[in-house]
Image 1 (cartoon, rainbow over the protein chains, first blue to last red):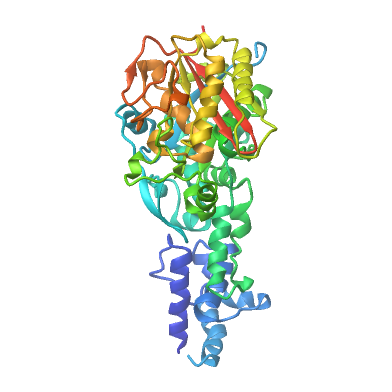
Image 2: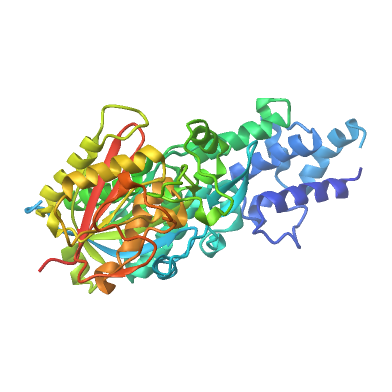
Length: 85
Length: 412
């Protein structure tokens, strides 16, 4: 598992929960909310899909870690690796 | 109602299993075209059902569809189409003066069943229960989704009235207009009930769920071989305005609302009471200032349950005993029972008769049950009649709720 693969996992989830969004040019270092039409319910959807699809738990205190693709990669990569991925 | 403002219907948006506009719906009714599908019901196999195929993405983003409810989507489509049909310059409308009143038989069964099924895939661990559940299942959901979609800041709520809800939504709206609470109302009823197995199972175990080898023949009110209800989804929302406001803007007027009544049987949760139904009709007539002979078209509620149809016929025979110019039809024979939308949709399908004088028939009546025989029943073939100035629309529901709405040509 690499950070880039984590980025793709997050993008795939966003494509599912926010199907109207154009994800072809998402900048990894820019906050997702600043470049996509995502609200707090959408972030809860991202958390839910990480739980459902990948068995990854994101405690509420860590939600800010999902702000950008880059921060998602930093935060989630160890969690995926801990699961042996 | 003499001293209260007069209320008129100025726009209609609808989706029925056999039509996504009044024009398409009406054409199919007059031509005798039913459209009932057969669907897979969770845990229950194949059953006939009325399915709507309106273009949901015409007015909603895909994310809104994913996060919202089917009832909300039906309501949004109908509301948007109604406003368009009414020729209202929406950008100029004061949205704080618009009210949304949506009748529903039930709401939340679909979403709750889906979520229970979802967590069943995760050993019933509730941490997999969606955070969308509460906004999806609050009782005001379908009306609230309309306000969010259309930027309406006036009042909104649903009117829970079992299968009398379509009429009840319209009645609520008329009252709010008369009180001056709003200047424009979007009102009627919606249903998403085909997506809940619980409604199917409940009717089936009550011996009231229709079955037939040909789905289009499954809904057959008044026929000897009827065996229950075909459950359907659908919606019909109207724009209602005070007559004075409608005339001021030069609106097309479909009909004037003459009068109404809602009452309660207070006898049984499921079995209808023909005495109270007849009383409901009589009160509505009195309020409208009409005699039974003045009603030219009765749109029946009959759902094709053996007892329910007989009871309604008994009520009608009581009131319309000597009314040679009163014709009677039923729309569920084409589209099944659209539950919360039924009353509003069935009225909509009949409204054009005020202009064209055509009464669409009750179809699928191969052998009329003697207990359902009534003078004026229009069966299997549309009928051109001398005049249709008035329509009386019946809509009844469980827990003994009866609603009757009377509309007609604009009175001079």
